[in-house]
Length: 132
Image (tube, rainbow, N blue to C red):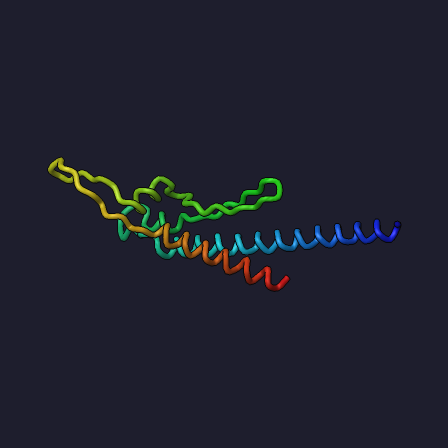
């Protein structure tokens, strides 16, 4: 009977170690994907050519790590100009010198970077789990 208890305890320990290794692999893949997304956004974001704040929006991409119990997540956000993200990604209404309204074209740069980050995350998790 004592050997059964030892076997159960040993299996329990092995499963806990495996779960921790899988969680670490997922966390590493998420961090790598967030870093790739931030780099991609820095490169693909529109840059003001002249005037005040040249390129500040493009340089403003940051990563924040959030931890809740056993869940780790990474958020990519623009710290310098957070209000511009939606306006630049989707376009907006503009007023010209005659008082009539027109549209400013959208510059999609967040969507493609997010798609690349998601793909990198999925491939990273698969590759890391194969190594376990």
